[in-house]
Amino acid sequence: MRRSLAGVALAVTSMVALSFLIPLAALVMSLVKEQSVTAAEQRAAALAPVLTLTTDPNALRESAASLDATERLVVHLPDAAALGTSRAPAALLERAQQGRESISQAIPDGWICLQPVVLPGDRVAVIENFVPEQELTRGVRASWAVMLLLAVGLIGGSVLVADRLGAKVVRSSKRLAHASQALGQGNLDARVEPMGPKELRDAGLAFNAMAHRMTELLAVERELVADLSHRLRTPLTALHLASERMGASPESARVEAAVCELETELQAIITAARTPLAVGPMGQGMLGTEPGASHPATGEVPTGPRCEAADVVRRRTAFWAVLAEQQDRTCSLDITQEPTPVALSDDDLAAVVDALIGNVFRHTPSGTPFGVRVVRTALAVELVVEDAGPGIPEPDRALSRGSSTGSSGLGLDIARRAATVTGGSTQITRGPRGGAHITVSFELATPVPSGRRTRTSRRRTGRPRGRSQG
Image (cartoon, rainbow, N blue to C red):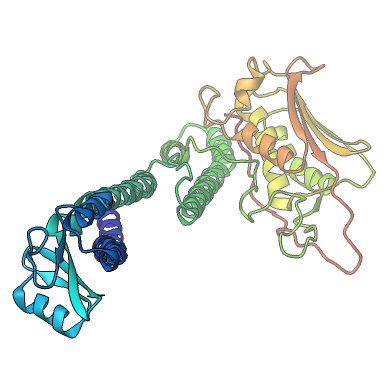
């Protein structure tokens, strides 16, 4: 591209320069010639008055010397020899004398000017002024050389400017191409710094937006795969418990082997679905806006999914209470009587409850009591799950997906993301029972405008959906 732009600049500038230089060079030559001829004619006309007064050769020579044209001015007197060396052709001289005609024309060695002068007695004298060829072209070559240098400078400057502009465009295009290749090869962090002309800057901004959106979509897709896979951990927990109660038998051994194989495959799916992509809270990016953000076209705040937290917690705790009874666990439930609307679907909030209670079953021994509470504050709904187990030694690490030891690292991360998407938070401390005390705070959902209905996911019934903390 740089070579093409330089070639275009060279061609265009050369044509423009030639279109001006050729006429200008001809004009300069014509002006120099015209000035030389005019000067010769003026010298001849200046000597004519002297010739009308006297024909004395000495006086005429003095007059010619005063005009700085002693060698060029020749006076042809009637019936006398010419004063000076004549270069005029005989035919032209005879025509000027007989026809009394002023003649100015080119001859082989230069330019000749013949000026007839009528003397007393009706005699005719002719003043000849010769202009050599060098005088007719004096300074022309120097002028042409200056114009040629200016033209070369202009052409070189235009080519240099075009090359620099082309280099900037090429550099921007190459960076955009390299970033596109890197993105196509799987480097999702590939970005380009917008530079160059406005069109290329817009293309760079569009590429960055596309790459960012692609990263978000891939992250959300992987999160979804990991979450869906992780939800199968609760049925596996129930199967483990059921196989343990079956006693030692060939059938129970086969069931236990099948459950272990299924758990191995499920763990492999979760591990493969993990990605280092940076994504926002749960649900962010799926619809292209964050929760509570206004719609870009209408400016309205979408209501989104909503559910009553107390109902979901009560329903899921009732299910887990059956498993707790089988393991001799004491399960306490304390739910506020106030309304507890949160901006989550039934499925998402149930997943949080299953993850937190499932952690109790997975990471504490049988017989360990636990409690579930739902508290309504002025601005939030708090879900508290505590147990009398060993607790969580590294709370910050447990909240990071894939960082907790010996598990998938998804359970507490699901609770954290669900809280964050509503504007809440998650805290892990050591509770009064001596074990883990997990508080998940959900911001209260905004009231639904009259005449509008919110859509929530269908309520789940049947099999448990517990999750591990990781």
